[in-house]
Amino acid sequence: MTVPTADSVPVIQTDWRAWVGAPGSWAAEPSPDGTQIVFISDSNGFPRAWVSRLDGSGMVALQTGRDHAEAVSWSPDGEWIAVLGAPGGESTRTRVWVVRPDGRGARRVAGVRSGTAAFGPWLREGAVLPLSTSGRRPEETSSTLLDVHTGVSRPLGYGDPFTVLDVRHDGGAALVRVGGRGRRTVLRISLRNGKVRNLIAPGTSDGVTDQGSFLPDGRVLVRSNLRRDRYVLMLLGVEKSSNRGTIPEVVAVHPGGELDSFAVTNCGERAALLWNVRGLSVLEVMHLPSGRRRSVAGCPELIDRVRFSADGSRLVVSGQGPLAPRGLWHCDPRSSELMLEPIPVAGGALPAGGQLIVPVRERFVTDDGLTIEGWLYRPAGVTGPVPTVIHLHGGPEAQERMGFAPLFQAIAAGGIAVFAPNVRGSTGYGRAFEQADGGALRFGAISDVAACALHLLRTGIASHGQLACMGRSYGGYLTLAALTWHPELFAAGVDICGMSDLLTFFADTEPWVAAVATTKYGDPLTDAALLAELSPLRRFQRLRAPLLVVHGVNDRNVPVGESRQAAAAARERGVETQLLLFPDEGHEIARISGKVRFAAAVMEFLARHLAPAPAPPVVSVAAVTSLASGALQAG
Image (cartoon, rainbow, N blue to C red; front, top):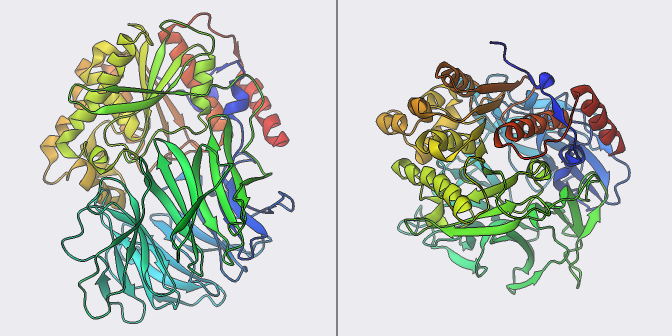
């Protein structure tokens, strides 16, 4: 049977095109003097790095080939910008570029085709960049400090895989993160002699510490949930005489919320604290010497990133909301009135074309007493039960929040409701909730999907025979699990780059992906029987629902073989199955043209199998491609 490609999918004609094809901007960082920003935008069709002034003028595209930009950072001397690029969207096959802010002089400084590369934060003076690489061969794994001006690099030391979080102000030590998912902690590495020192005293390390920043006096601010259920801001003192570490001190908490991330000015005077309060972002600026905290006004509902300029004169915010794609804002953190102002680049404004829906919070209690929350996108003006799809996020260490969800909006515009829950294992609800799906506890997460379905049916939101399940990455795995553990509940399923067999996933994914995943799923060497039991592919004799399987061919995180074998097994059992492959995408569909075609495929599949009435007319792919191109030119 011929496998359809993205170019062969029919497209439904509704106002959804303007939403799905709306460009956005994200991952912004100000120049050292706060007058410009570097950011990522897909305004020309795929994610790439740009530079502009705060008023949106003087935009320059940074040339890093056809790599999808994944991260950007400005050197303290203002002379260079580091860009993390993913060839063909391969997020596990990355490389590091450096380029001048005016777009000249781009060169690749790290990354090989068979491995991955990353950069840490610049040293606070000049243009010295921490680089790390991982590969299948030992010689491809290294950690160095590169002087971009001279091209000279020196080893960073410490042999185990780690992520550089910060470098001390005097350049004498690096703060690094080590450990697998759910077990991360921080260490200090001397850049003079390579010695490694614990920062946290033994007996106080019950929890996760995963973000950190040096203060000028050598103390360290960290995001941690040590001995707590929620992440807070903590302070680690300086222990010079031994490797015993120190006892962390709680610096800032938020009632009812937890710390998402934070940023600190170079002088150590202020910190920007980004809190997650029941899925909504709250941003504060804290005066560190006094502990005084002030709220920032004008924030979008979901903030992804906050960054100070090196001189502390500018705070730049990347965020989004249910009515606006990802955009950028800024303010002067020293001002008496902390009010964000938009930066007029792509995104951040309501796209044209139809009425967007503000989702409502839906919550219920499972049979084992766990409270599950989610966001319900209900078709406008509709009462009574409607066809409904449950959408499961990836991770599982992630959270469905009130961001811009054009696919959900498009599905709702076609008469189908979307419920996006946070089942156990999601972040944002505390450490106990996040760890409630580890190993054999994953059966509980599968049961949560069934509980969501039963809640929708009991409350009259959905009706029997018109309920589907859909998810991406880990959410795709949960979708396949729900369809095989609870086949009686679902009339259709959409699996987007999900793991169908956990043992083949561990065997075929990149080694560094597998290494950090064992702490969450189980070790294929010691837990093979459990991983087999948790694998949906081994229960496909119970699969009944028609299945749409979607995958980027360049995906090395969850290899495309996971979808190929799922589709083949479903067809072998006589289940109606579509396999939609994107040859120029990786673990995420990043190109706007791909997003449009992907949304079209999902909408057509759900409309056919959940039978909302009436179905909208169909137009050709060429017509939608032309419309998407026009939207890009307008952006």
